[in-house]
Image 1 (spheres, helix red, strand yellow):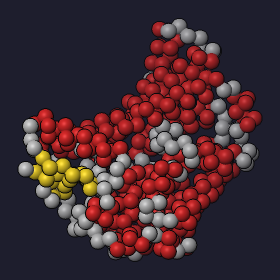
Image 2 (image 1 turned 135 degrees about the vertical axis):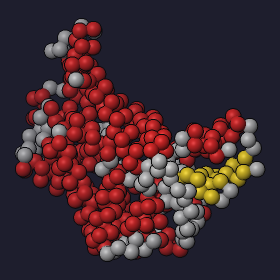
Image 3 (image 1 turned 90 degrees about the vertical axis):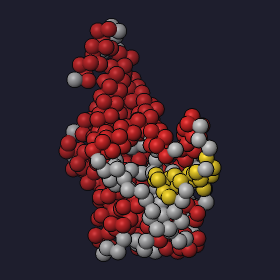
Image 4 (image 1 turned 90 degrees about the horizontal axis):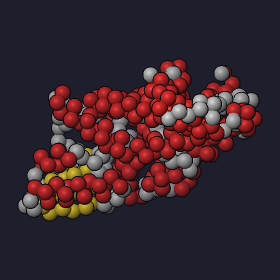
Amino acid sequence: MKNVKVLGTGCANCKATVKLIEDVAQQKGVEIQLEKVEDISDIMTYGVMSTPSVVIDDKVVHAGGVPDRKIVASWF
Amino acid sequence: MFDQLATLIAYQWFGLDPLSHSGSAIHFFIMDITKIFFMLIVIIYLMGLFRAMMSPERVREYVRGKPKWLARTLAILLGAITPFCSCSSVPLFIGFVEAGIPLGVTFSFLIASPMINEVAVVILIGVLGWKLTVLYVAAGLLVAYVGGVIMEWFKPERWVEDYVWKIQMGEVNLAKPDTSLVGRHRFAIHEVKEIVGRIWKWVFIGIALGALFHGFVPEAWVVEHLGGTDNWLAVPGAVLLGVPLYANATGVIPLAEAMLVKGVAIGTTLALMMSVAALSLPEMIILRKVIRWPALALYAGVLAISFTLVGWGFNLVT
């Protein structure tokens, strides 16, 4: 099962990203472990400076802005 | 072109009277809505093709370790073209500090980024013309450069929250962006949907306000209270007005256009635009997580004074 982390301090874009990922995963019937990382020190350990960012199985797949639906779909 | 379309719709189809307040306001509304959304879509797409290759992480790599004047120049030029979301201010700030980039350079970046964005620039060209747009961009870059320098004089290091210095930033482990033409096209289309989707309400409101101003506020009133290049108080007033008006740089342009047409001085209008874009309360609140109030107050103060000076300057030379 994929471990998906959404990094962000809680602004509207971050929430939108979480919802988008949940929607797409559900649509594709893929089970994921979704976490929100909101602590800034933790976020920085991933080496990103633009949020929201998405980390899947410890690899950063996206940083900055809400990702495109098609791109999210391609992750699962 | 958009003027003619608006004339067709407002005056021929709806039969409104061009001399009436509402007729005039609605004509302005239709003209600007079509013009601005058309330009928005075109320019965001084109910039998207280019921006698929830019990110704050890259800027950080380019800027770190360079001599200060070069770092600052790169920071403001790259800041002007880098996509920026307010909530990224904090990780961005920390990332720059952690890379050893001088605080003043970071502040220069933070000033340039929201104020100069390609959307605002293109719309400005369409609405105010080349000359004024170049002046706006030049003024913005100058304020960003000088603002960063001034911030540095006050040694803002002492106001940065302690934890920022202790953060270890991980290796930038970013997947390589897709720079093929197809990949960039997809990114650009996504940018259009995302940005227009995010700002259309603000643009709408801005245009509506502009239309109301255009249709209902008599020119004489404007010239008497706001206009004219010899109204000194109007400029700081415009700067103050910009603070609560947190829209984005784009939304305020239709209002600025209406104000200019009615005779408000250019400097005053520019001061308002810059203030709306760069002096935003939400941004200050977010930055509070990394710097303390004295630094925030200094930041706001430097910007407010700079914008006022720029406004007065423009009024003097035009």
